[in-house]
Amino acid sequence: MLNLNKLKKLIQISKVMELNLRDDNVKTCIVAVSLDDGIHETNLSEALMSGYRSQSTVFMNALKCTVEFKAASNILTTEIEKSLTAL
Image (cartoon, rainbow, N blue to C red; front, side, top):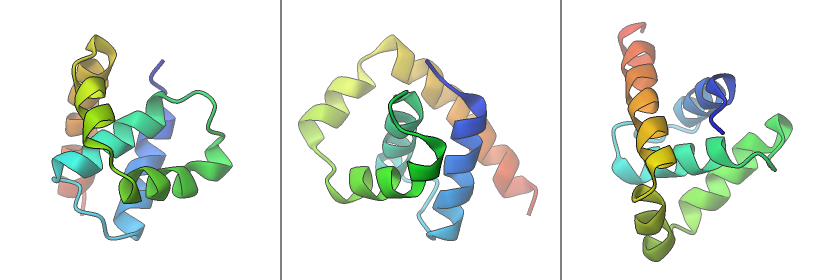
């Protein structure tokens, strides 16, 4: 289940790490980490970088086909635009 606060923290972490928030692979990694309830908020940076470094096309494409991913991705896009225009 999507946690909006977790999603916002991942956006901030991505900015600090200077990841391109408009890149589809970065967005997919952010959504994947945000949907994983097993990742504690203190481990978000490590989880994001782990997902980003080991991008598996098979798993990423499978994830993109899910309804939950599509819903989370739409929310992420809105939150990214808010965060980038707030600069």
